[in-house]
Image 1: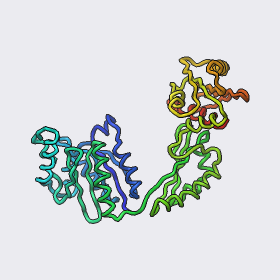
Image 2: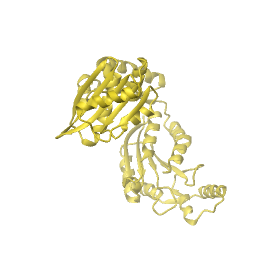
Image 3: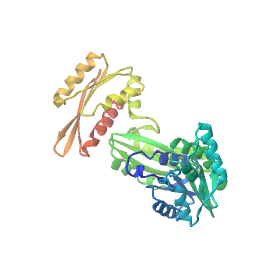
Image 4: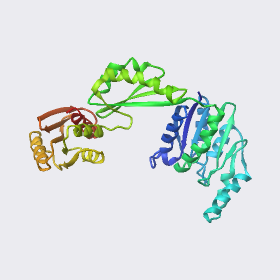
Length: 380
């Protein structure tokens, strides 16, 4: 199975002016195609540094993708950089220039002289027409290795990847395998506790099991390489079953399921409705519940934190005013080097109050409190 590397090109990416969405899209597409991704790199608009990144990528990968730097301006150096990395010159391709001119004619415009630069590609490269933009792309083959230069405009990159570059790679490398993932979501438990129970599974080679910790939530990712979709499912199922047996109710959902969806579904199964009162969470809990489908009947975001003993009073009064069965109150209180998260849950069965210490970064406290409060609801 060939390995790949992605090199995204653009000084604006390095400066943080734009998000590198191309690398994310490429990574997911390569996974679907059964291609291992070894590394992702971002490089500014400098031909020498781009060439260096390409040469480094060629030391360990068969497939090297570049995105960006194919425009008509001086700071679009990918064509020259690939040529420099391979020790060749760029050459003018009349057919690419005709494609560029035809594209401009459809726009009712005339290309400028600098657009002519886009018809130059590394000597020996295969030119690839861009039917959704003005920047032609190219592919260079060197033995078993391939460099594929894609445009940086996301819409163009996505179209060309799916309609030209992936079909080319499937044929060149006879790709038949698939890489699939299954993600199990947990809440109310720490990464170290999970690792203590499933550490041996994290040493598997295929499928692999990995952890991704967030504030108040830990994801467990199962990744498998297989010859078909059906075989991939067969390989994932026993590992998932073992994880569920060991972790039990810590797992609340899979893949695209969210904690707020699961929590609201649990409330709905009881025939109840839910309201919340929050302080110190910046309104995030109310927004998340409002966006989910379920029996959410409103939320109150307090501009000032009530005293912990008063949180239950505020929550009970709001619950009664909105005629809801369940009232959840959440507030964050600074307490020296840590913060205390106060949780109040009022249901027809009574009132439950908890205070949980949080010692992580201050800016992550709202998300930690949000996950713990939703976990409290789903465990009603």
